[in-house]
Image 1 (cartoon, rainbow, N blue to C red):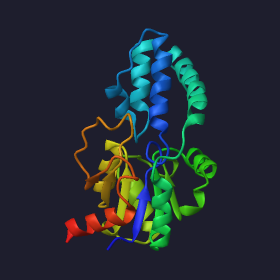
Image 2: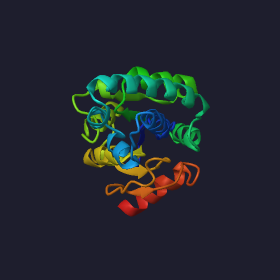
Image 3: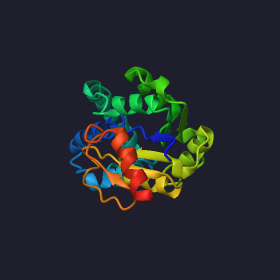
Image 4: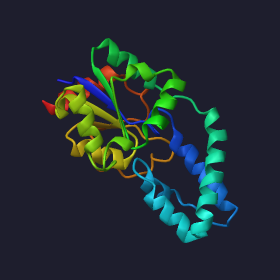
Length: 219
C-alpha cells in the first residue's frame, strides 16, 4: 500500500534544467564551443563535476569561472518566464487529500530548493525535504531517498519517487522506492533503464491512477 510520495525538484517541479542548458549553450557559442545535449544530461540530477571538466577542457580553467558567471546571469533572466510544471500542484493537493506523506529529495542545496518552493507557493506541502548539502553523496547514490523515507516513517516499497533524470531514477530504485519518470524537454531523449512507469507530464495521469497502476503491477 502506498503511504508516501517523494518528489525530485530541479526539472520535475519547475524545469530549471532546460533553462540552465540553454544558458550554458548560448554563452559557450560566444567561445565557438558547442555544448551537446548528451554532455549536459550527464550532470542532471547530480553534482557539477562533469560540467566543470567539460568547461575546463573547452575554455580553460580561468575562463570556466567567467562562463559559469555569465550562464548564471542568463539563467536568472530566462527562469523568470518559467512556471510550475503541469499537474504538479494537482498531485500535491491529491496526495494531501489522500492522507499521503509528502517528501522531497534533491541533489541541489536547501536554500536553492526552499527559495523556489516558497516562490511557487508550495513549500507547506512538504513534510520532509532532503537536499544535497545534507548527505555525503548525491544522486545517483540512494542516500537522499533513504533519509527521506526514514524521516517520513515509511518503508521503501510504500513510497513513490517522481523523477525526471536517469541519475534520480537510479537513486530512487537503489533505495527501493517505486519510481515514476516525468521527463522534461532536455531529459525526454535520455534512455531510462530503471523505473516503473513513465508519463509525459503529471497532467497525463492523475496521482490516483498512478497509485492504482503501481499497486496493481506489484500485486
